[in-house]
Image 1 (cartoon, rainbow, N blue to C red):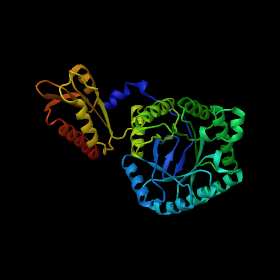
Image 2 (spheres, rainbow, N blue to C red):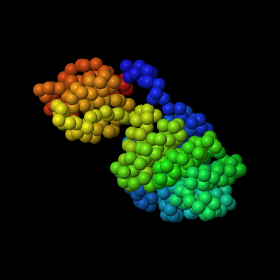
Image 3 (cartoon, rainbow, N blue to C red):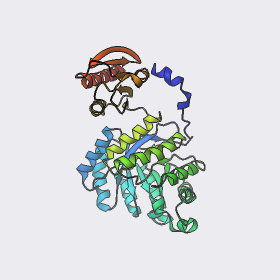
Image 4 (cartoon, rainbow, N blue to C red):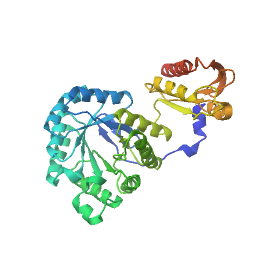
Length: 370
């Protein structure tokens, strides 16, 4: 039934920009590959165990790539101990010191994120390219509005989409001239308008995969809103092959937010998509507490599933008709349960949370067996 509903909703279709495909380790990026989700550790890289633990915590909630900062020699030495214990490809984040990039490649990083504006001379970049070739690394050209080359700042007087794109093209040419094509590009800014305009302009002049992000977007709440607007607009227009939501928060929240953006746009389907009302005086059960409890207990689930939890019949029946599991508040403490859009049975307020979780788990188990 859910598939039939989607087939009659052509307005949901997003036509992704056609890009060439690269690989970061075993993760395909670009072309028809799913938009990959990544985050970045915020532990000291030299704290090997803490960094490994944080990488795997992010993997548990859906990270497909993880970035680790390599600011000094001790960090690149630590990377050698970290990477063998990570279950996803590691991207080394490099600024200022090109030798850190070479050391990271030697340590087993599968991608080198370099900011052309602060990595150094063309010769140093060429040495990084050689290391990437030698050790099978991809490269991300990471242009950032906050660290543009001085001559571009003098030319444009301020970071502009044209300045960010020119910086990206300049360094694309260096990689291409050195016969290196396994790279992706980002043109990040903390300003949503600047970032979106820069990415759109870049997508019109090259077919390399784009890593999208709104850099330094802020706290969990403010940064989520900012990223949803900026990244959502880009993804809606078909731009973006891999993404990171940058939040001043636990990296796991970045992963969760990224998937929520992708699920909302129908670009990825991972985990439970929960539709719920804000509640009002008509609610027949405590919607907010119910939703909080259910969401916490099913956050580990990876199987795509859409459920609705609404406190009364005003919109509850309509939403339940379009979800795999639907709860609509009823009278006398007994609430209506819909399965695959059809009324099925009732459940009491006391049993509600456990019952919803049990239905979700049963649905997931059936999906595995089919």
